[in-house]
Length: 138
Image 1: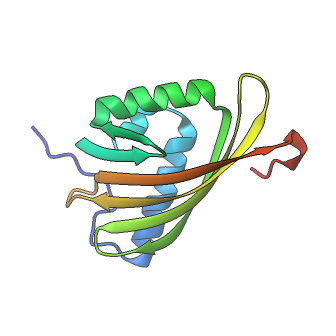
Image 2: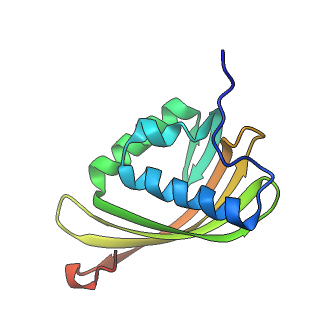
């Protein structure tokens, strides 16, 4: 079996850390749970708000449910800091509920990667702000 690799690989430089963040933004904006899950180790560990998610299968289920509830999802990520195999990101995204209420979510993520460039840990702190449709930025 071939070893999975997700480029760019650690150790990160400023350029490769920015590239990793941009690739994550593109993947998440696809709203394709299976595609997104391929960036994570098979046994990835997540904390997303107050939820704990373990492994790719749970990631796919979590994202599938997320994007059923968060319609018209649009995300923007920004590199905050990096080390050899860790990246910190700030982000904001907007979504609409089934009741047509718009929200903007703000947050920070801490990512840790294995030597093959797969994310083994993702810790996300997120806050939601109700907004009017005319106040959308993304």
